[in-house]
Image 1 (cartoon, rainbow, N blue to C red):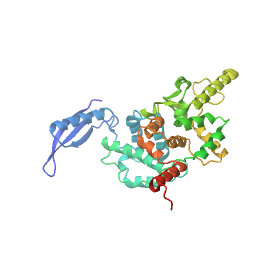
Image 2 (image 1 turned 120 degrees about the vertical axis):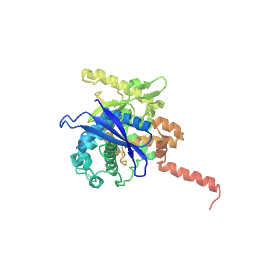
Image 3 (image 1 turned 90 degrees about the vertical axis):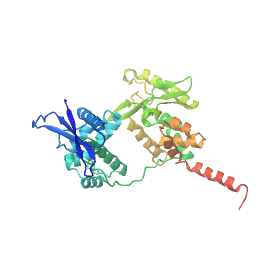
Image 4 (image 1 turned 60 degrees about the vertical axis):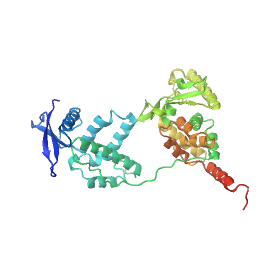
Length: 388
């Protein structure tokens, strides 16, 4: 794209001076009409010239849309391709695409960006209490995430000069309570462990309680990640679902790449599990699926992430335990560390949290037994041996 531009001085109502940037783009290939873009900036002439060159670079990189009658759907596709896809993980991109497909495109996709008004967006947000795709109620969290996707696209539309101001400003979002993790007490932990014994979930539960891995981190572990001599395991990959398929990616954050010390009883279980896998491989021959993953089905096939959550639900019913998410097992591991007096910084490193605040928030959901113990210790210090 060959783009030229110039700056022209403009007087403000108060007698000050601003600069209008005028950029000439190639003629519209359909209409043949001249295409120009304008931008007004304050400052010195040199600052205006720098702003003009930056504006031209943005135009030439495709950050500016020359079609003035672009629909929400068309602009979001451009926004995804230019701003989002190069900068986010495949799972984040897939989540964006799913929300756009289910909640934005059906209701707002055909509307022109220039015609989209705050009142229409508020009505759209209010209507999202019921999913247009499934007819089921949507959580406040899902509605907020979907809104912020649309807002991100509209904010970029402002920067690109398509619209003067974002229609997403001033929108009232639904209030919702943050979902609290379900934390088992010590007796319930033992119930879970006993219920898992002898099942395909036994090693999974043991590893979660001892290591506190994310589901994808657990499923991404391979035998080559185990240091048998030093009783350690390295977390270097994450197996997640993208567009219905299981794929590998790096851990969620740089802090997620970590090496964990493993308790000796768990190391012994891992050795036995490896031996069992080798025996099955010999017995099944070509029918055995060859992979290096640790958590696999009896036939060697890697476990699909959602399968673990389904099996955990069955295990909870078997043990007559309150239902919790698979991710809550990480919180349970954190609570166990708290009970054992593990320093919060050490816990942060083991859990792979980027921010210690996340670890502290989990530590705040302590087990009832530890909370009661804290109350007793406070009483001992305040009252000593004094009796009522």
